[in-house]
Length: 577
Ligand SMILES: Cc1ncc(C[n+]2csc(CCOP(=O)(O)OP(=O)(O)O)c2C)c(N)n1
Ligand SMILES: [Mg+2]
Image (cartoon, rainbow, N blue to C red; front, top):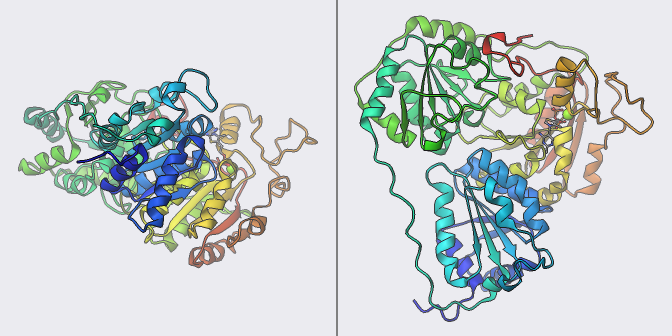
């Protein structure tokens, strides 16, 4: 092929076009101007080109790329400039790394000859992102651009998915392409499927009396949720879906235990406590789940695509490194099955306590808000959250039906994730309603993306569960820190008594007036609800509105997330009420 007329920018858009990238989420700046010039040139000629969605802050763009990838399974792509653009992107990169989200983050870089001179807007993006990305590349020679981009997209999506960073020097974008370098051949072959080890896992499962499958995010990444359902039915084994696997098993399924861990469900935590065998499929024994004595006296088996996870946190034997789909197909073809009526009867009794009942009162209960949203969307919405109590209530009270409908920051726990991720999730799946359940603290961390929302007519339904607190931290202070409220009250002013712990339900005056945002962002509908009896009607009104809508829901300020296994405690020590 004759490359003589092409620039680096041309190669860039050609490769992204060939890879069928539909959207890039980003922000602009000096170090990426050549890419924008070339994109707009192509668009004005009517050529097919990816759509660039301009965010108000690079962090928003990065979370949108994650939201897109989480909701669709396709690779999410963000494009930003050098220096502050790249540093603003580091939180989404780390977020995608912790939850294994297939993403490619492209950053502009100063010209290759200026690297190391402390040039304007130069930062060492490669150094900064090395510990938080699956892999990263600095492209200083246009001859390497094509294979680097192909390899980056390949790496992001294969094996254990994750974020890949491509740092692209500005002179590379402008350079005319000569002969290109061939791809480096350095990636090993896939490990062949080890039938003996797989059979050892199946044999251990058949020997068990009280087995539990702990399904992790890997089940969703592998597209193996349907196979998992057939597997749990064939072997009659209940399954706890971790935070990142919510939706992999429908809420109403007799084998569904819900989410395990610190704020896990009664069935999941008690089944894991009493299990004699735990089979982890595509999960990493996070410390919020594998709490004190998690493995004591039990056989732990582990199947994962990433060999470095085997034995990292918890010793597992038998263990198998494999694609989860391959393992589940092998197990289903083995001809084995099991029946465990007594164990399933016990599971059924626990399941009657999921979700946990909650009280009523003068103030709106957050659990009721989530349940109402769940009912009115028939459990089928793409559900996005911030981080905190509201996020945990969403895990507990929404009746999930399908994989990829749950879009939330797990491993990193990033406040501010919700609004931009909801925008990305809508681009991934515009036919499903996208509901954002956010916290008043989390929402304010990326509130600027309301601009992106209304500019692009994105009909996300936003419910801010407004408790006037950084509630999750307030809960820890109340339960474990003697009830002091250190810097957790969002209503506090300079005049307030710093020692105030009065949970006055009406004291939210200092809080920004969220309903007034309709005067700031054109076409944003806003509502407020404070009365429990009016809540279902307001939720319905919001969900039925065709455009973007923000509901300020004044919830009970002092509601806590329960059940809870406190740090350092065992599953059997779970506080239920
Ligand atoms: C970026 C970031 N900063 C700080 C934290 C620590 N943190 C975890 S939850 C939380 C409070 C969240 O408040 P809000 O969004 O109002 O949710 P609520 O718990 O009240 O539902 C904080 C500060 C975090 N997770 N992320
Ligand atoms: Mg709050």
